[in-house]
Image (cartoon, rainbow, N blue to C red; front, side, top):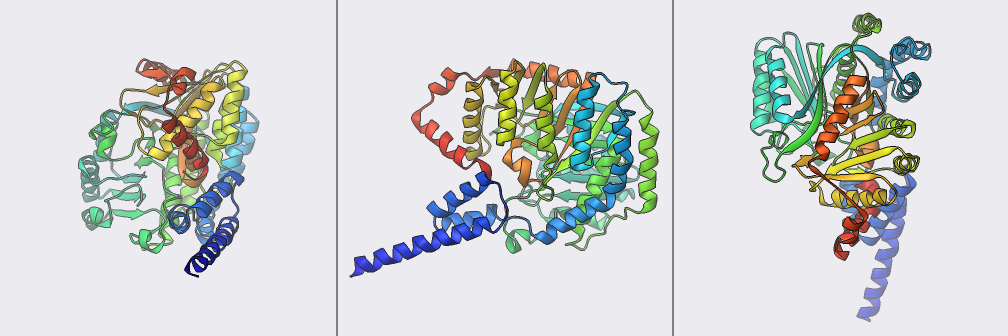
Amino acid sequence: MFLLLLSHSLWIIIISNTILAIWTVFRDRRDIAVTWAWLMVLTFLPIIGFIFYLFVGRKLSKDQIFNIRHEQKAVMDDFKVQQQNLIRSRSLLTKRKNLERDLLLSNLLLETDEAILTQGNQVQLYTDGNEKFDQLIQDINQATTQVHIEYYTFSSDHLGRRVLHALEEAARRGVEVRVLYDLGGSRGTNYRFFQYLERLGGEAQAFISSSKALFSSPRLNYHLHRKLVIIDGNIGYIGGFNIGDQYVGEDPKFGYWRDTHLRVTGSATAMMQIRFMMDWNTTCRRTKKTRIDIDADYMRTQFERLAEYESRSQGVPMQIVSSGPDNENYAIRRGYQGIISQARQYVYIQTPYLIPEDSILESLIVAAKEGVDVRIMIPCMPDHPFVYRATEYFAKYLTDNGVKVYKYNHGFLHAKTMVSGNNIASVGSANLDYRSAKLNFEVNAFTYDHQLAGHLKAIFEADLKQSTLLTTDYFANQSRWLKLKQYFCRLLAPIL
């Protein structure tokens, strides 16, 4: 009798769990791959799967998405209308080589993200964290009007305190200081860390949420993964470095930290500033912080500034491109796909997480089979075990299909770069994975400049000297247990 009762109870649990899993997954619009991945987790891991879903699978609420889109639409519509004719008339790119590729990619990014093509930008490229943060702190120390900072990680460690001290001194001088950080990415950092800064007149807040967000809305997706700094409206930073000791090589687990970041002066900083303002104001809708007034006078000033740079033939043409779960155009992913599909000579990619969506995966393979020199560089060690095993799976799949995949051996590779042809490149926060494509808020700089592309290509080739080419024999000699983990993690790829 007891066994019969137990059997019936188990069947009730299994049937109820299956019905609830189907309802949970299908009540929101998702990719087919994501849907099946969640069905597998929820069906085969009763209770545990639902707890995992609570933290990882829940989508942004419709009111949050509406607020984000409202901020974007209010600011960018006029910019887009103004520039559509300029790009189509080729007036912004007529002096560049490879004009057709430039036009196709720049128009794609304008249409998908309203990303304005800016002119006359001067760019410094950093691959070492100490050099980047020394320069950043120096720029903050020289700020006279405002410092806006937006990072996925703002750690309360030695480097974090160095940056915070510079911000506090700036606030003491009367500089407008605003800090936007991701609560999940900045584990151990909370509002208390910024209390003294706020007493001096600065402001800091966690993106789209209050300090109690992890309790009131437990969600591990939809992070602010952007890394932006704008100083006095004239200096901008964009790339892969976060604020934390590991990013300057002070974490024994990772050793040397290899990343890529840009310091920009020129009209692109206006678009970085607008991106920050929209993110700040979106978050202010749920906090008591002061909104930034983006009024008609401010917009007119930015129009005039962009127009001033349009006639300059010197400098780097650049588009600041954003993507996130608030917009299903997935602009950065489509930008990546545009670069790959239009490549004729080579595509060099650096990414810590290689879990590409099918469209990117096929573009890479098609390019390689057409004779394009496609090379991808990944880290030699994991910072997330499941993600790294999935990365290994896709590295093997791409290797089997003619793509050259390298493992960087000199520390941890965190750069998110793509360079192709004579002049097209991308540097930013977006990895080549599902999370960056659809789940996180990202920002990249897409550039059209022979010198900068050549510099990034040379850096990649220098990194090759400290890397190992992964071959079919390399993967064939891996243990069966490791291969099993890779296959299993590949099944979870859409939700990693």
